[in-house]
Length: 274
Ligand SMILES: C[S@@+](CC[C@H](N)C(=O)[O-])C[C@H]1O[C@@H](n2cnc3c(N)ncnc32)[C@H](O)[C@@H]1O
Image (cartoon, rainbow, N blue to C red; front, side):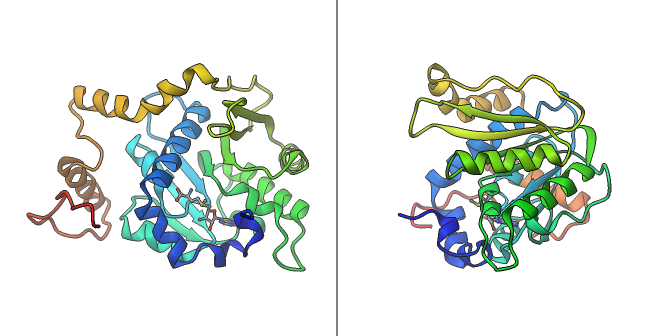
């Protein structure tokens, strides 16, 4: 099966049907959530403080939900209106912007404490129109990202490189734009679990974070359930439980965002058919 980037431009590939999978396919959702958790870990943000973050290629808001679960505020940017519609339906807390990363980001200098991006960067290596030059688009994207990040910030991209040339193209353009850093490969010897993260740093060269290796894989798989157990122990409601939904709605109301009213059905368990 050919790679999604070879099938259609992202704004067409991520249509309503594709976007639906991000609410229905639990395996896909789990993988996106796990990769988001790892990307946030690689951001190495100072502990226990809320931060203002960017989610690049935020799509249906799965990665954004992980950011808000960890107490952060975020802004999402994506080219597909169908994916952003799903994020709206999900009532995510982040502000959402429709746009093309390859044309650069429209944000104020130094506005963000960090950025994450899950499974989006490889799309910029494609030329979908005669006017598209991947090298120029990557440079425009990375330089606009560099300027809207604070000087201590990091940007972490989980991505699917097609080959080593693509990886070199991305890292070269990122360094040209002013970043330091490189690629961290988790589970390098596993065909299934292998994951690529481009870790970019603004404020000077620092050692790259350590990659995960096979022995840690089992630990990682049970990470979400461990996190839920810990939350429960700390008195926080479990993710997607009734209490969790009510808290989230209350937070939205405090932020003045449109929020559905609570009913006796709020947070009910649906049967497997839905
Ligand atoms: C595999 S999806 C990941 C979705 C998202 N991280 C989530 O949690 O739902 C890749 C996303 O990258 C977005 N994307 C691809 N190319 C883009 C571009 N040039 N500009 C903005 N977004 C882009 C797509 O529209 C899609 O939503």
